Image 1 (cartoon, rainbow, N blue to C red):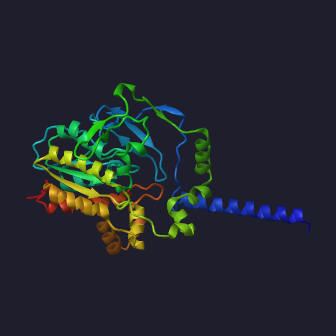
Image 2: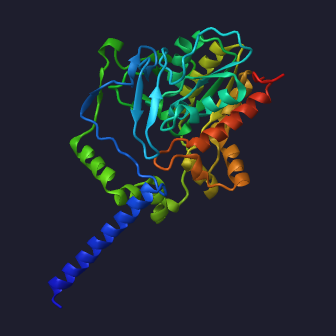
Image 3: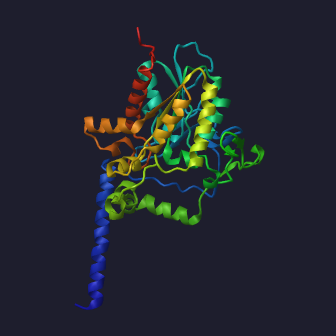
Length: 377
């Protein structure tokens, strides 16, 4: 057999193998055995239809009374905002209820890629009969913005407690102007510790009113990912870690990778929230990501942020710090489930199971602190 013929046959075998693998993966995806991520292919610029930098105090927020449906590998997910711009049901600012909870945070709290009814705030409200007002939002939302949101929006609502969710994986970055686009309208802290001032990169009326899209090359790449399921799975973070031996080495936890300036910005904004909330109690829940579970398993985990928050709480009565990580680990052990099930397979946010576990942790924390549900006798 000639050399050219051998090469042609081998190329044909490789091509046939790829086709068969693609067919098997498509069948598995259709049957729900694997998740195929959907990558955006938006135009270069688009109008703000649901989420954008529209608030003069904290920047990114939802357009009020708006509904959008987004396609996900789990099926379509509907996002609805109320008259206040919250991804929540209609809420009155006034309430005479003995308990009412304000919940602050980013896309984990908002419930990215899950339905309203699957979120921990909705689960808690159904379980207790107590309103859990969800002020979470996507869009690179950090503690400085949470402070501004609490001061200028959430404080309008009668409430008895504040639950604040910290995501170390990106909340420090969200507060750092050097790691954010200066084309975004959002608040930052300038100056030094104990004398920070809130600044904005531009006047509110000069902010972009259209959302920047992506380059043509990135759109083409994303289209390939969307249509070539084999490649789609290969770039999945979990599968890549499994296939790449270099990814098996110990990783640093997001609980430990931040600077002193990062911490100063975080604690300054938390201190302002605490002052505004008095005499209400503030609960800070620390959210782990997949890298934090891996770091714990490989022995590189130190949990620095939890220790720093406990030190902050000792100096500021009225704060309780709860690390979600050990609670998730305990649940995984007692229920014999993989920790990866706490997250969506196609996205790093909580799955419905992650929201259910979070709801249990929040409720137990509040009940230990005298929280009474509407169903208590």
